[in-house]
Image: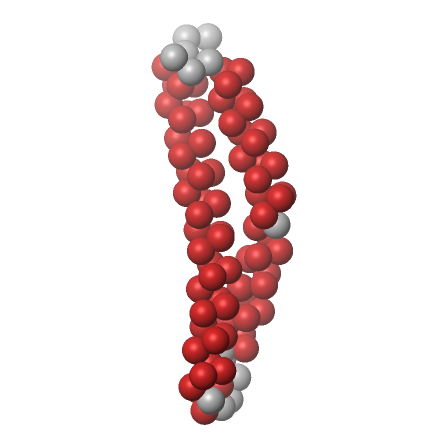
Length: 86
């Protein structure tokens, strides 16, 4: 069985992972890169547009992957703590 201490460790590691991966920075970068796709003439150069969309997609993968880890860690924390009798 998972202990509260282990769950706290998972939470701390999840927070450390967020900082290590610079998730907030990646979110900002995604927004900036997406704005570039709205520029007039963006689609005029198909190769450049494709490279830009790939860049946005790759950044978003990092963000989504982290969100999945955070969700699983959070779900475990709530699952265990709701069963615990205080």
